[in-house]
Amino acid sequence: MNKSSNKVQVKIYRDTAGHPFPLVVRNGVFPACLYLNAYLNGNHNSPLSEGKGRNTAQAPAFFTLKKYAYELKRLYCHFDLNGIDLVKRVASGEFFSREEVDGFVRACKFYANQESPQENSSVTSISDKRIRDAIHATANSCPQVSTHTFSQLLIRLRAYIVYLYICHHYDQAPSNQKVKTDDQFNKFTLYINSFISSTRNNNTITKDAFESAIPADKFFRLLEIIKESSSDNPFKSSKLRNQIIMQTLIDSGVRIGALLKLKISDLVDDWGNPRFLITRTPNDPSDTRLDPASNKTKALSVSISSDLMKLIKLYISTVRATYPNVHEHDFVFISEKGQTSGQPLTYKSMHKIVKKFGYTINLELHPHKLRHKWNEVFEDKAKAKGFTPEKIEDLRKYAMGWVEDSAMASVYNEFQLAVTVAEISSKNQSKSVPNLRGNHE
Image 1: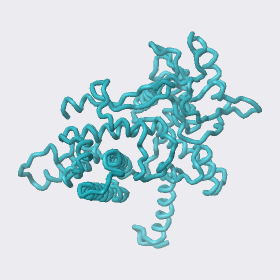
Image 2 (image 1 turned 180 degrees about the vertical axis):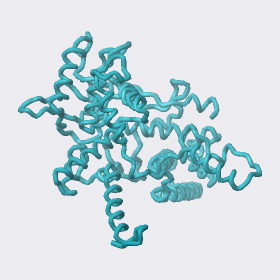
Image 3 (image 1 turned 60 degrees about the vertical axis):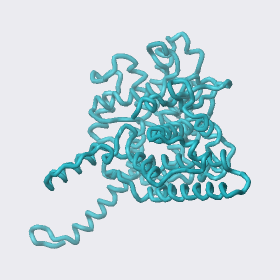
Image 4 (image 1 turned 60 degrees about the horizontal axis):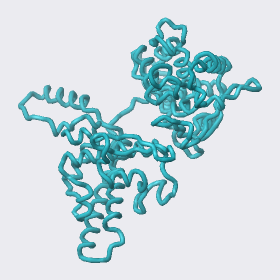
C-alpha cells in the first residue's frame, strides 16, 4: 500500500448537538473525498438503491454508519492505489472496465492487510507433492473474509456509484451523451449485481457445526478464573468490575453494547426478581464517549441472579463511588485508572478484558462467543425442562431481544442441530451396518 492510502483513516467527530458521526479522512484532518463523506453522512439510501432502508427518512444508527465508513475507506483506498478517481470516472460517464471491477472483487475476498496470492507469486518448477503443499499453505496463509463481508463490500461500491450517478447525471436532459452514460451505468450495475447475487452460493469459509463456541473444559476454567478471588485471575486491579462484566455476559447473553449502556437507574431489585433493563436511547446526551454505547436489540428486561445483583451493588457502593467525577453520569461500569478514570468504560476496554481472560485459558475469546455459549447452555436447560422446539425458539427470541421474524435463532443453534442430526444418523447406521463380529441387529 502506498503512503497516501496509508494515511486514510476513519475518525469519529461530534456535531454541535453532541451526536457522533464518522468521516473518512486523509492525513488525520482533511476529508479524503467530499462526495464520499456526503454519501456517508446523508445520502446512503439513494432512490435507486435496494434493501430495507429504501426511501426511508430514518437515518442509520451510528454503528451502521461506522461500518459503512470502513467499507468506504477500503473501496476508496483500493481504487486510489490503482490510480482511479471514482468521482471523475462517474462524472465523465466512463465508469469502469471489466478488469477494474474484477480487481476490486478479488481484493474484497481477502482481509484488508492480506494480498491476493495472484498479486505476489512466482512461477517455479516443482513436484506434484510440493504443488499440493504449496496450495495448502497458500489456502491457510491468506484467510478469506466471510460471504457476508464480501457481499457488503460489493453492495457498498454499488450504492456509492449509484449515489455519484445521481449527483452527476440524474434528471439531465436527454442527449446522445446521456444515452451512452446510462448504458455504461446499466452495464456496471448489471455486472456488479452478478457478483452480489452469486455470493450466497460461494462461501469459502466452512464452519464446523460440531464445534462448541467455547469447549466445556475451557468454559469451566473460565468460570473459575474470572472470580475476584481466583489466584489465576490475570488482572492485578479492577478484578471486581471485570468479574461482574464477564459474569453478566455469560449469565445473560447480552451484547457488550447493552452492558456498556447499563445505568444505575436500569437496575431493578424488587419482589425477589433481580433484573436490569436494556434500553434503546440513541444519541443519549449523557453518553460522552466518542463511540457511544448502543443496543442493537429490542428494549427488554433481563433477569439475573441475586448473587450477581449483590456484586453489582457492592461495586457501585465501594469501587465506583470512590471516583470524584462519577456523579456526572449514571453508567454502571467505569474506567478505573488513567486520564479517563471515572468516565464510562469504552468498547475497546471491554474487548480487552474479554480477550485477556481468553488468553489465560488459551482461547481466542471475544464477547460474541459468550453470547453463542449462552445460547448453547440455554438450549440444554430448556430441553431438560421439556419445552417444545417452538417454545424454545420463542423464549430465545425474547431473551436475545430479537424481533418476531428474526432468523438468528437458527444461526446460534447450529451446534445443537448438528448434534441432534448426528445422533439420529448414528442410530440409523447402527441398525443397517453389520458389526465386525458378523452379527446383525
